[in-house]
Length: 300
Image (cartoon, rainbow, N blue to C red; front, side):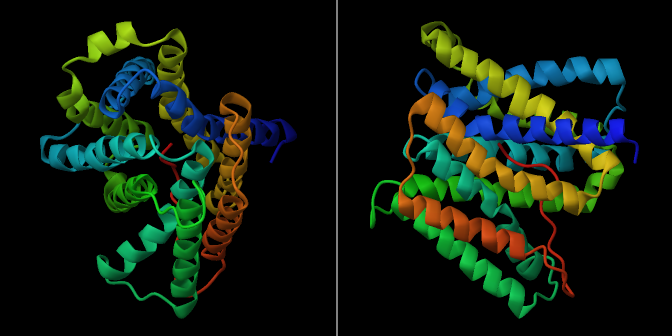
C-alpha cells in the first residue's frame, strides 16, 4: 500500500476514534440543557440534515417499498432505542464508565449468535462472555462507589444490546444497499421515530445554554455523521479485523476527554472493570472455530 494511502487511513482512523470518544462527554454537556428525549431528537435532526447533504452530493438509491419495515427496524435499534437508553443512562453514570460499557456490544452479539441465530459457540467464547459481564458489573458498581449498583449503568448496557441487534440485522440484510445508503436510511428512519419527542423541543433549544447547544451540534455532525463516513472509508481500504482493533482506544480516549472537559476522575474499580471488559472483548478476536466479529460501526 502506498505510504500516502496508509497515512490517510491512519488519520481517518484517529479521527473516528476521537469523534466517538467525544460522544460520552458531549452527551453529559448536552444533558445540562436538554432532557434525554429532546437531546436524542435534536442530535439526529442535525445528523439527518448533514446526511441529506451528503446523500445529494454522492447520490443514493431510493429504498424499495418491501425494505421499509427493515429500515424502520434498523432505525429503531440503532438510533431510537440505543440513544434514548444511552441518554437516560448517562444522567446517572460518568462519561468514562459509559464509554467502557458501550464496548460490551460484542458480548451481546455473542448471545444473539447463540440463542437467535442458533450457531454453536465454543467454551472459549462463553468464558469471554462471563469475564466481560463481570467487568461490566465492576464498572457499574464502581462508578459511584463499591456496592452502589446503579440502574443507569444497566440502561447503558441496554443501549449496547440494542446496537448488537442492529448490527445483527445489518449484517444479515446490509447487502441490499451500499454502506452510505444504509447509514442514511437508518439515520432518517430513526430520526422519524424520535419525533415522538418533538413537543417542547423548540422551547428546550431556546432555553438551553450555548454550551449545551454547541454540544448537540457537535454530536450531530461528528459522532453521528462524519465518523460513520470516516469509518466507511477506513473499512473500504483496510482489513476489518485489524481496523477494528483501533476502536479499543475509544474508552481511554473518552476518559481523557471527560477528565479535561468534565473534570471526571474514574475510580480504581471502574479502571479495573474497563481492563476486564476490553480484555474479554479482545479475546473474542482470537482465531477459533467460531469468530465473533466486532461491529464495524460503533454506537456513540
